[in-house]
Structures are given as structure tokens and as C-alpha cells.
Image 1 (spheres, rainbow, N blue to C red):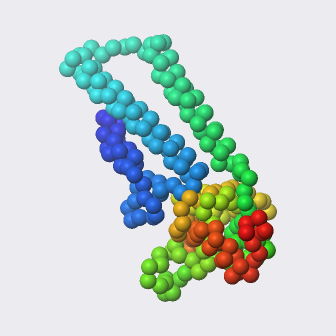
Image 2 (cartoon, rainbow, N blue to C red; image 1 turned 135 degrees about the horizontal axis):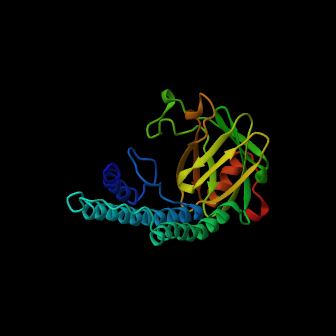
Length: 263
């Protein structure tokens, strides 16, 4: 009976989880933020496919529970069956889950490979986690660097987001394949940007790698998602995606150098 009630309550949750997502963090938001990178699109497609599969399995199990509850109720079966084994039934309920898992492995491994292997990228950005702020380096643009701190609540301007906006966002061009090299200067952090499907740990003494290609100009918000100390909740990530032309101008304003091939 408890299992039946749990499944009955879980059905609305599965339906809500499959609803369209949001473009930015929303109060009481459900599901995933809208995708704005090739990796994010593939992850969303795989996620939605699994949701439909889980929903189908849930309906099947619910139907079996309802059938068993009705078919083998005490009033209809005053003398309960003492059957302890059914070879065919055990083969079926073992084999079907195995086949489902095997079917999931193929798209899962393809997605992991697509996420992990960086294609030919235009330039590299180095991300370094500190307690409790981020440091960004542009080695292909003159090697200039800057720090990114959360804006304190008392310093927020109209329109800025509490606990999310920073003084120096990471500026990146749209439509450009960008490689990220990530490390840490102290403890383990995690550089996470949900709308771009990036979530990579920054580990002291180690370099991790990921990549992205932002599809639309705008502001993208993320946060450190590894518990890194008392300031963990106060090191947000902000990416400002601009046109390639605006990005080159920003590089020059920062005193960096625009590579000849980007001119």
C-alpha cells in the first residue's frame, strides 16, 4: 500500500519535471535551465528521453500494483497461493531491466565522449578557484588576468541579482568554441554553469578541461557547486556573452592582444 501511494504521488512530479524549462534561475523553478550550448542541448535531449522512459516504467509498475491488488485480494483468494518460484517470470523481470540499461548505455557513452573531448577551439580561458572568488586568465590574448568577486548586498545596483552578480564577469564571444582549463589555488571548487551544461571540479595541483560554444548573447549565471568552506555560497559565476566584435574591443580595453587570426 505504501508503494502504491508513493507512485501515485510521484506521477505529478514526473509530469512537472517534463515541463519546459527556464532561461534563467527562477523562484520555485523546476527542470533544467534552457540550453545555450551544443553540450547542453544533447544533455537535455537525453534527460527528456529518460524522463519519458521513467514515466512509462512508473505507469507499468503502477498498473501491475493495481492489477495485483484487485486480482489477489483476500475476498477473492481466501486461500493464498504458496508458489515461491516462477522461472519464466524471474527471467522476464531480470532480462527486461538489463535490456533497458544496455539501450541507455549507447547514447550515454556517446554523450560523455562529446562532452569530454574538446574539439578544435579558438582560444583558451584558464579558471582558478580561490576561497572565495574566481580568477580568469586569457593566455591567448596577451595573458592578462582579473578576479571576479560577488557583489555584496549593500553594493547592489537596481537590476543586479543578490548572491549571483559579480564585479567582473567572464566575457566570452558567442558562436566560438572555447576551451577552459580549470584548477584551484587552495581547496576543491566546482565551476558550474547550468545553461551551458558545464560542471567541472577545480582541484589543487591538477588541470581539468572542458569546452563550450555559447549560442546567444546575454548574461549567464552559475555558482560554485563544491562545498569549499564558509564562503562557499558566496562565489557565483557570471558569463557575459557578447558578439565577436564586442569581445575584441573588450580585450583591447583590458590591455590584451587580439590574435591576428581573429581580426
